[in-house]
Image: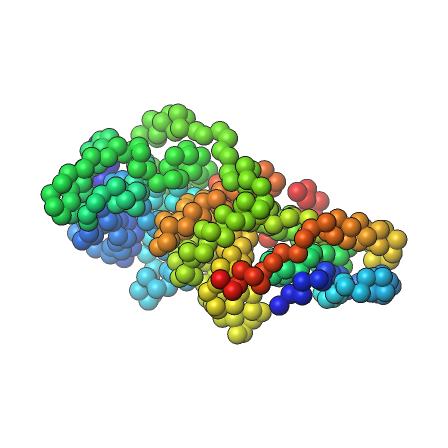
Length: 330
Length: 136
């Protein structure tokens, strides 16, 4: 089943590809269960492309104006073909509507995904380091260094975002190729909708919440990984946290829990209008800080208060930057 | 560095507002006035920083949406101020510590009454101890 999707992606790309184009997709890495981003310029390399439930990295980040300059060769005039999961396609839509890249430059290929696996969850259950990791239709098979074998249910070791099907919705955009059966995909989603989720902000009292946040964020080492991987953060050249000497000093350089709380407060406040809830910041965090309690709250707030869902279409300007006279305020 | 007793007030600098500011400074010596050009230009992360470091409250004084000298300034900022309230709530801080007041610059009575109400509501909150946790 999975192999077929992989073949279909490769077949589609060989048809579309023209000399001078760039393909952004995943390929195998040396470690078991790891997939890395691949930047392909040649037709022979298309066979290396992989898609399975280990492809957890979002590739949408590479379309930003700044990141694009680092990848692309000088005088690049071709098209960029980017392979995406449906949740990453939302981040691509958001880069379109933030005017980071024009739609004419990009060919979006959305792949019907069946849930992505959280490697951290699996590594927790294994005693020693993993040598081999493979998947069947519903299960994952791992082997240790010592030769011990483990079997995991796929459904139980999903990433957190895959449990809620609202993250898997397809965007309202007619310019993408869909690999897989679209009708089947949409009906599959209907069974997984979570209608009302309770967040810690609803259940806890403010003091308990403050204590919990203090406890969790005391682990933070301010490595800036959550900022660097975020597809919604695109002003990396002039970030508030980067050059405190030239502009107003909002956060001190010293790493204390008070400073880290302020850092996360300002960061989430800043990206709330274009956060699509892709969960990359939580995945990239080396200290396993549950950042989802913040961005899920902000996503809900944007939907309830402003009636605006980031990443839904390619041309909706964010509500907090634009205003037309006579429009409703809130 | 925020002073723990203070309430910070960011008024937009319309010319008729001078009378209000004088009266506020007479009545409440603990209110620190920091004039800004337009309420739409106010950087909300400054308010977050002040409240997080222990200031009692932050008020932004702006013109009514539609009356703004820069046309859309107060309209955009009203949305952003709503988001700051949510940010405070998400991190377990009282959302009432931040407030935006929309009044005509010459309307002294109404603005004074609203500021009185705000200070009354804030006085029930205890000061947020930032310094004790820094030592750990």
